[in-house]
Image (tube, rainbow, N blue to C red; front, side, top):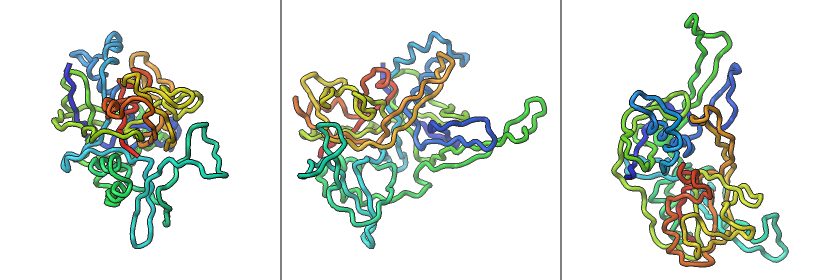
Length: 368
């Protein structure tokens, strides 16, 4: 079995539903996320792999295609030959007068005398590495690999200097929302049904920006095919470029950054990796048992709702809550060698095998 990178270039404004209700009520709006959930892309790929020569999906194919390993999606800018990753949540941007935007890192800090928190025992708060003097602003949601690499591995000063080159991109360079109004057609008359007006807000992708997935299958996926809601089309092509490699060994203090959302939840903490015990210590899936990581702090964004349609069962999937891409976990390697973390690079930290096959919880590894 070979693994192949496939570039998915949306041709129309694609709709990746964000979990908010969408009914048949007049004026309803279906909104899209900028990037699809891994399950959306994995489901599309498996549906295509399971269809027969006549385009039908036999129920018996479901169990087999669920075994197909999918990694992604990863935004890729073909003209710039640049991988893009979700902005890390340990980065803070402020507008400081004539100096323009300045970036500062959030880092774990021990409590000072007289201070306290409501955090679980063993965890420490995050503080800005230097005081922010200006108004907080929202930076770009996607970072190019050349900047992300510095943020992962360089000293805090060098990483913040590299991030200073980021600017809020023009909408022409990133996915941007494009609303479309629709009506319901009466099948008998072929005319619009009165009052049945609704809107979809899809994401328009520029011609050079696609979504790349690594698929463990020999099936040829090239061609024009639909993806996401509303049957929007995309061009699928094989990609020869390789995913970024791990830039080097980590130290004892390790940052693990989600690049795809992850279903988490351990010991009553919905943001916590399930392989951690009650003392927030454990071994990530796929690593030797002698490697132990202890969680010190975390920067977690607002949860993302994930559902979908189960083609095999013919019904909706139950809703799950995910930690968003960009979330950061600060670990300390308390047993084993940091070099043993190499297999985690762009792999999944999810506990359950099917979540790992679907591409949830893929991570980058850095230091702090």
